[in-house]
Image 1 (cartoon, helix red, strand yellow):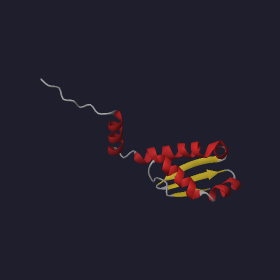
Image 2: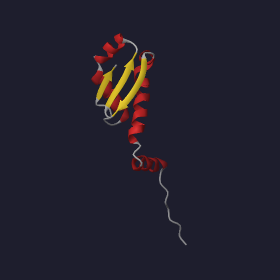
Image 3: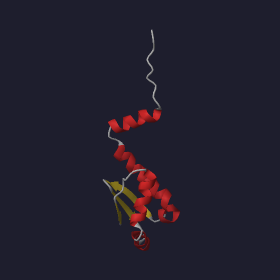
Image 4: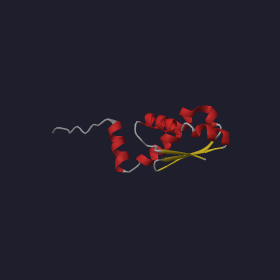
Length: 97
């Protein structure tokens, strides 16, 4: 009796599980929140109250109006940095509140 080889790399199994259960959007939300905090550093993080991804729009609530204005000048750069780190276009618009 010959045994069948059903071995697969764990990365492939997890990827297939995520796709079959439509979990990609939730994981992207978590990834974007983590990336915002790591890419923009402690200075911005101390004024960041909430980071939320809805669809392709990233909503960031800031406690400093001065920082909000400063970041608004670099929205496209921030979107580009986030999408580059994610390896795909997840964020299309950034709304600073």
